[in-house]
Amino acid sequence: MTHIPSPCRVRDVPGRGTLFVLPPEIDLSNAPALCAGVLAHAAARAARLRLLVLDLTQTDFMDSQGARLVLDVLHRLPPHIRLRVAAAPHGIPRRVLEVTGVRRDVPVYDDPEQALRT
Image (cartoon, rainbow, N blue to C red; front, side, top):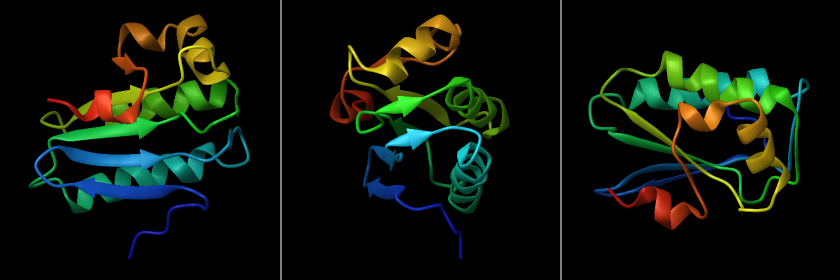
């Protein structure tokens, strides 16, 4: 069984993908474990998983470790799995993704439902 640090929630949306609702804070204390959990979940479902969405809409604080988490997931996912991010338009996570340049590599949507649309 994959252990994903709390309060991360995982929701499989049949026919659309998997949604990871990430915690209110992402920093050095939890980013490596979150990354490992996301990648383990993706590996366990690799045969049928096509879209993975990291939901940062409930994340209030994120530093560069959150940006690194997104990039690490992107580069370590099997090539057939697409990665998208949902982040509130005026939130700190969205700004961190812009400043670090992660938005150039990973599509960012305003809400999880938008990100899950294929």
